[in-house]
Image (cartoon, rainbow, N blue to C red; front, side, top):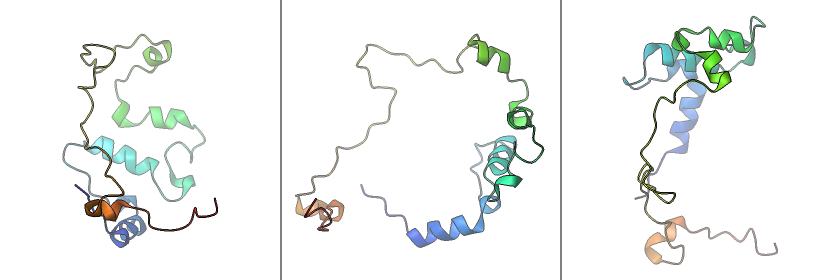
Length: 121
């Protein structure tokens, strides 16, 4: 299945900026606030830049309350999720996607690059 995304819609969303983005309900307010603070258009307005404290400003954000930064650095913190793996070739923890369309097929012509940009390449 081919998903068409209107480039002008994407462009207009970008122009409105991060403050105009509506996050899904599954993203907490603190997570949304962190994302917004990190994605400000002006770099000097971004979290970790303005006060000069750098990464410490990011670490002090409410979303990270209770996070064990020392355990992360020491590699002693337990992983939040450990997948079950049956073998070294087990791919059940990954999403399944259809094979790439065949560019020579008439039904998949929309995926074909018909330009001649590489003619003399």
